[in-house]
Length: 138
Image (tube, rainbow, N blue to C red; front, side, top):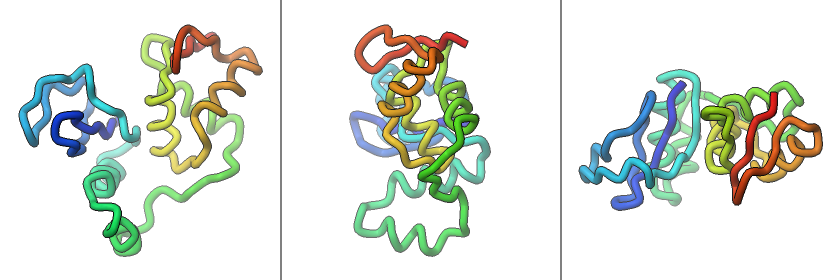
């Protein structure tokens, strides 16, 4: 599993497998302050996600049209797909909205991560532990 992260200092994105040490673009070592952009399963999808994340908004549409089809947009995912995203987002059974949003985007699911978390709470899968943070119960 790979994670696309954004540096708060320079705003550039890159991919990591495991834990990021420092920004390869500006050298900033604030690894704890990285924004998770998305989570993907393979290097091919990682390359596509990093390219799209670093592309200016005005050129993103053109890039998406030129790249080979990757992850399809899924607006009606199954419960199993949502649970898989929750499990991907869980680190030591803790799920943050930021990481859940990245897992959803990485799977092509276009649903608000807060809505998924609220549904997880109502189904007894998650328990709120703080602002934007949940504990995975199963």
